[in-house]
Image (cartoon, rainbow, N blue to C red; front, side, top):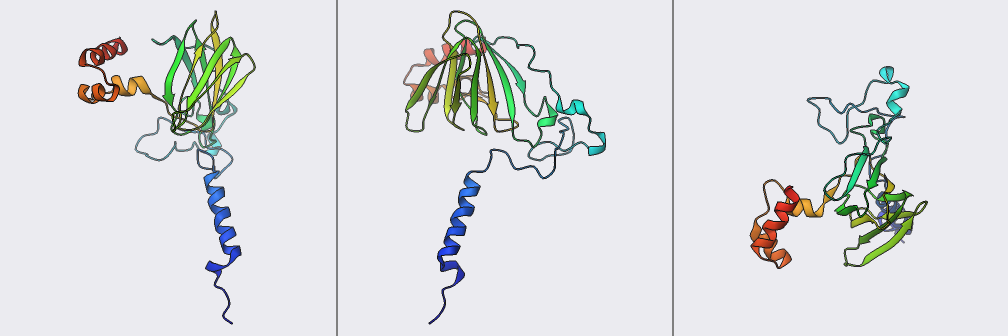
Length: 222
């Protein structure tokens, strides 16, 4: 009786499925191939997924230190400000697959609907009261009112938002499993792109007239 080939054996199928599962559970960023790779964000004539590494002999303790979150940023038109801790500003994060943002909200401030294409986000409330929510690809909304000490997670690539629901300012920390999660703000992508999306496309997409589209563009331009 002929023996079963490896490709048709149950063991081969199990091993193949295991490899696929391991691959699907992989972190957002590639695994590092060394202890660290302090980035050189200003390197020229080099194009790769991430930043080239500083020579180990030139690495110092301060490469793994960052004070950029100590001060809140300048509030934007939506009443929120961001202090960013990503590989571009904190080169010690290069290849480590993590980053952090400090988000400060004025009263009523809104971190408007947006997407992080490269990372899951874990939101931690430092002070105040914040509503956090995301929308699935089936248009199901998951929403929760949060207070200081609470956590909420936004799955990678899904539209989400958070806003201050308290009577005073609020602050959160956003943790990402990517050295640079990327952010696509829906309203700005659609109404403030350069060059502009044709008005006709926006009118048909939102079932509104040209005057409404132009008014939204003018508001966001300010």
